[in-house]
Image (cartoon, rainbow, N blue to C red; front, side, top):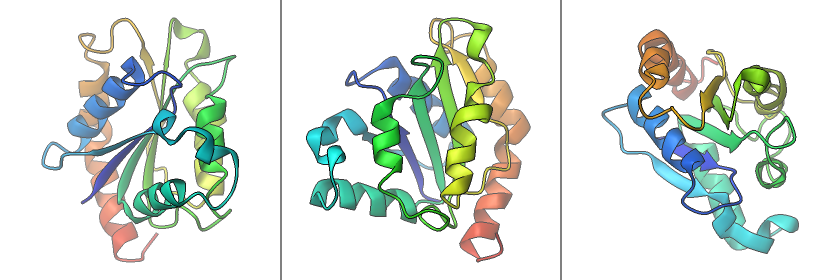
Length: 170
């Protein structure tokens, strides 16, 4: 199963990237995730037809499991991630992709943001999202055990969903 991480943090090499990569590795320890740090795509995200952006869209569309990650910004995911998601065709752009929405924040006030704000967009684009979104504390995600508990609880379901999507049984 191919695993990709999409990072919507406007800061390169961010904690968001680190956390999302840890989530991907916990969910699929047998597969090294490909990381797409959207900040590296720069102004190519602002229009249509940029070849580098198009290549990343194809890469995400072909992945079986994708962790979409963003810091919580103004109570939602970043505009950078929104610009990237707008590059996908509605309803089919993420068909056969199992998606995991992940958001980081400073406190529990926005703990529902991955499910209330990011997950519906992924589903609208055709992704399968059989597990709840994951909200992580940006200060304690490396040692609070939340990622490990999430992977223990949902990893098997995400793998089964990935095999079904791959077989065209979404």
